[in-house]
Amino acid sequence: MTTGKFLSFLLIITALLRATNGLPVPSNNQFYYASQGNINRDLKIGDLNFIHTTDTHGWLGSHPNEINYNADWGDFISFTANLKQTITANKTRDFLLIDTGDKYDGNGLSDASLPHGKYSTAIFNKQDYDLLTLGNHELYTENNTIMEYYETAKNSKFKGKYISSNVEFVDNNLDGKLVPFGDKYAYFQTENLKKRILAFSFIFDFQRINSRAKVTPIKEEITKEWFQQVIQRYDETQVDLIIVFGHLPITDVENREINYLHSFLRSVYPNIVIQYFGGHSHIRDFVQFDAKSTGLQSGRFCETVGFLSITNNSKDDSFPQFHRRYIDFNLRSFNYHLSNLGGLNIENSNGAEVSEEISKIRKKLNLDEVYGYIPQNYYMYYEPLTSKKNIYNLLINKILPTLEVKHPTIPRYIMINTGAIRYDLYKGVFTKDTQYIVSPFGNEWNYIKLPSKLASKISDKINKGPVVLNIPEAHIFDISDDGKCPFRHKKGLVKGYTTYDSYGCKGDDTIHNSLGYYEVPNVIQYTDDTTNDDTLVDFIFYSFLKPNILSAINNINKDMKVTSHFFTDDDCFYYGGLSTQDLLRRYFEQFL
Ligand SMILES: *[C@@H]1O[C@H](CO)[C@@H](O)[C@H](O)[C@H]1NC(C)=O
Ligand SMILES: *[C@@H]1O[C@H](CO)[C@@H](O)[C@H](O)[C@H]1NC(C)=O
Ligand SMILES: *[C@@H]1O[C@H](CO)[C@@H](O)[C@H](O)[C@H]1NC(C)=O
Ligand SMILES: [Zn+2]
Ligand SMILES: [Zn+2]
Image (cartoon, rainbow, N blue to C red; front, side):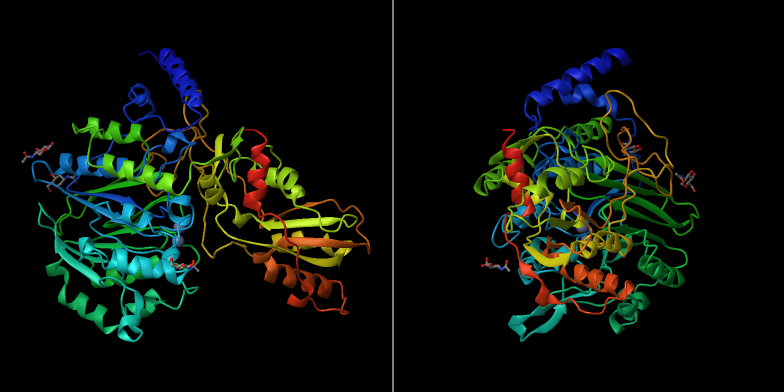
């Protein structure tokens, strides 16, 4: 097909997809193969091959409004099974499947059930992981921790495969004794090449933890007796490869935990390949630590399947070859790579049953219940705050003003933290699921009575301070290329990641149009106050922000040498009204 013909074909496909209201097209749809031309970068199979996922946050049921990520967990299971079969068919290579945690908070499939994860945990565990562990979102609530421990860490399917080197569980059946959350490490041989692997899994120094678990910082854990014994027993003569997979960013400019760990391991193992798999900061990333060590991080929300291969991994060879690829989580990419390697398509493979089960669960949880219609895309980072395509612009101008008025004659400020929004809104139906996706956190509205001239200074004060997130999670958003990779704007290509990493700009399997990236402030607000004097206003805010607001007000007063009143919890009152999720829902109802 010529390029011109191909582009017009793409436009027809796009139109067809729109006509289905953005819902996923069945996987046997021939049009997917027609648009294969979007993919330009293949997988380079090596001796050791890895597929890595991280930070799935419940997104096992696909992305109904985004064709770029239209595969579900069943498709992913079919993909990896067929890929493994293809790669290891003549028993000359190995294949390992790894996940690095964060399975809650972000999607109705995990968060709309009581307890959370009731259905999604079983679905996640259908994947045949060789190595897996937990993230901080398995550690905020007791319910999540208990579910993770008993359903996954202690699951016989994952015996010897569920590893956490620095997390412990508080076992109430043993009088609250601390027990390892899975195994502390693994030592095993690969199936075909018989490579001897020593694996550890560390989580970053997470301290906002519930009472049923304990995290020991890496620096401290590696001084413990058990760790010292392991590295003595499995010295360089006993190990061909070290794998460190865990819930920590591989680029960590602030705390450098992974760099500390690497220096330590390299001092013990100067000649061995050390391969890291990371997570938590929700980006695609690849880092070369030294000639024999790299790290891969595979994005978030089932948007990315990370692929890594290592060739010539032997102690005598001073130049192991590493290859990384970020595969878009969609049917077209999955089938492209399989067919390219001479493997089977994913249709009618073993994951189909899982896809069916997911549909049933979505039905049971009513996730597809349609509340409204979203007429266009709204982005968190890809459009500036001033743009009508920016989700915060929508909130400021259209959503927050609709909060029910409590005191009709009094001017209002209505403030939320931008971290309360978790995902973009895509054109298509607005469902029960959309509510969990866009803003999963429960909050209520509080207010303080303040003179206008004080209220008007709060947002500046908070926006100049340190980052405020709804949960203490480091999101380093280098989603776009930071200007380091060429900007692409070509008709017919889907918008998506252009990842810049240690190996350059060519890691993504699909060549996308570039996404712009704009910083967002800590907080945004709507106001109808124009006075800026001593007029009393209602300063309304999300309860989560209370400590930030009180500290901002007291600091402003201090700056202005006003000492008449120190603001505390006693000055904050309940305002009431619909949550942001419900205000959004009411807004999009009108377009149905
Ligand atoms: C195994 O298969 C791969 C490609 O599928 C080929 O390159 C390799 O030479 C084969 N090895 C053997 C021992 O047959
Ligand atoms: C924890 O799970 C129990 C049992 O399903 C449920 O009743 C309870 O509401 C959950 N607690 C929280 C805080 O979600
Ligand atoms: C692997 O090692 C062999 C022998 O040392 C060498 O000929 C070959 O080029 C190496 N391959 C790669 C990909 O480094
Ligand atoms: Zn996460
Ligand atoms: Zn995390």
